[in-house]
Image (cartoon, rainbow, N blue to C red; front, side):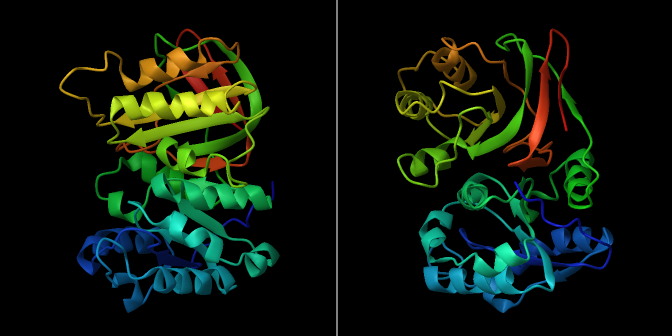
Length: 297
């Protein structure tokens, strides 16, 4: 995978909202944080458009993002929030100029759609916190974001989990939000998982939805030949009046118990405050032991 150039102090970072709408007030603290880190923030009033739950119409959101993809003076695009909507844009976007001068696209959750397109095109992208979350993020999460953008990735050590499967894997990391990946299943955008470390996270899903999505991935052969599995936050799950009987982590473990590749839970990424930056499309080394697990380059 091709790595976009690292950022330098003073570089221009554009803000884009490909999904849910956002207000100027919600962005003031994040803008201050980005500027304090030494970057110029680029946005205009189109960022605050509203069309029901979306940040403007599909054509409005596409047009603004396309400008930033094409503008060689923009060195990174931060997606301000997720929600739902990126899937409605992906087939409208033209990445031909981006491919000539790639830049870091940064976000998670619904932004998994854009990550999938970039991996399909052969480019790394950054699964990391978005401005809407900056004021709740840990200092470590925010620092990891800027570290990766400046080509200063640091190994991530995290606590073990009883359902981990010990071992080591060295492979590209792919994946992202489980629900969003599920929406790509059967299309050319679903990432190649054979020989890869599959990363998964999700938020606010019913437990039986998690079961259905994992079964769908399993039946489609997407879980069988992984180099490893890396599971982040499975946050604020919902249950029915009659309980499903398993947690989200237990569901994922059940549907991967028949395989032998290393598997770990508790990775600090996803819809959690300590949302560490993770380069998708880049080869990492995953070491899962009885104590802490480690992800490093």
